[in-house]
Image (cartoon, rainbow, N blue to C red; front, side):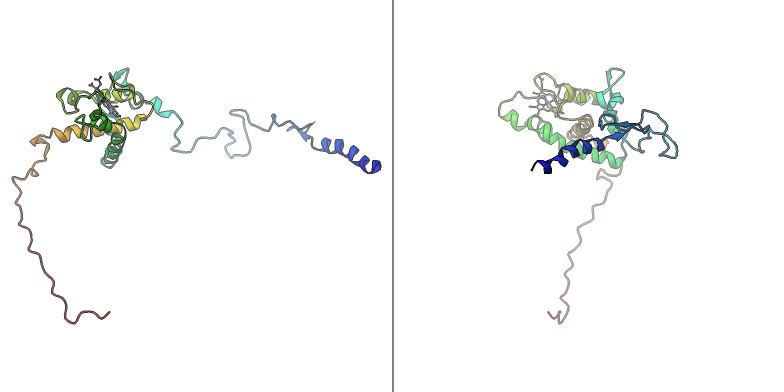
Amino acid sequence: MRTRLKPLLWGAPLALAALGGCTREGKFQPVDMWNGARLKPYEQVNFFDDKRSSRVPPAGTVARGQDRLNESLYYGTQNGTLVATNPLFAAASPKDKMALLERGQERYQVYCQPCHGLAGYADGMIVKRGFAKPPSYHQERLRKVTDGYIFDVITNGYGSMYSYGSRVPPRDRWAIVAYIRALQRSQNAQPGDVPAGKNGSEEKVEPPLEPTIEKPSEGGQKP
Ligand code: HEC
């Protein structure tokens, strides 16, 4: 028994020594994993053709927190004062505008409708059950406020309405603002809002066509 254990006793330290590694310069050192191969920032490297170790991010890369650099988009202000118009909506193509409104409608129905009501008349379920009644969006004062003002109410809250800053990210806030503006417009439409030639007076209304009844073909089809 003793003799059989002996090779093991000698073998273990030898095996441990073999686990040692080399430094990048080729010097021997025992394994130390905290000193792995790495490149210092801007160090030259032969692996890439341009010899740059710091790589250029792929086109379209969005850095985390990048929106913060855009004051009007992220904070709703320009040089510290609330912006007049919705920057996200203003910059969007007609197709993107529609998508933004749809997003705004969906987010509005999640976060605002319970109090402000489906159409913005402050008749939401929470109000019906006794929560303080907000003002209707369709009063003159709120029709005249800027887009930035509504963005600010969502971000910081207003009076007894608490802040939605932590729940609704800035881009969604702008989508909601666009939707509220659409709601306001829808409840206060003026004859002038209808494009010329589309208000019905000039249009001839065609009588509905007589329904045509197809005769069943003779013989029919065999099953
Ligand atoms: C829990 C109920 C509730 C929810 C949800 C809610 N609000 Fe309000 N909101 C209120 C109340 C109450 C007021 C009036 C506060 C006051 O005058 O003290 C108000 C006021 C407002 C005003 C008018 C501020 C003014 O100048 O009078 C706007 C704009 C507004 N809310 C937008 C929103 C938007 C957008 C959302 C969704 C992101 C939202 N609210 C969600 C209860 C709510």
